[in-house]
Image (cartoon, rainbow, N blue to C red; front, side, top):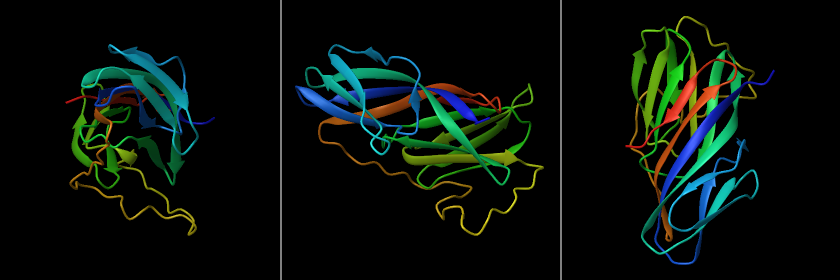
Length: 201
């Protein structure tokens, strides 16, 4: 049985130009479970372009208006050598945050380059809460139980050099017609019982 996570991703977007503006939301690996929810004073159309580009929102409104889009998604989880990996292809939003609740009493976790794992907290009900900052672009979070041995994988695969325990200053890419200010969402793994929340600042 495939391991999957249900996520609700929320995007807060400032549109700077009049007319129809293309806003790439990415998340090409995710399956949309229901119609997108939109809050704003304009019009919004959502389409899926391809696996590489992912989802694209087309917004038409007056310049300077704020818009919110909520997507309920199903995202695959990967297990390699006893380690669970959550991979998200995200827009480069400098304010993106991740709050992940994993159904395990003690785990070790790492995030990809450009993001920062800022907190690991044990909860009263025997779970572990992970918090990460500056998530965006090709983001990966991996974790395994502290008392487990992560097996070596075959030589044809090796973890990317960008993986680490710690932090590094994030980067953002400016867009001429829009600014994705905040990425947020909640989710639950259908296999491991983890809950994922990406919260605005």
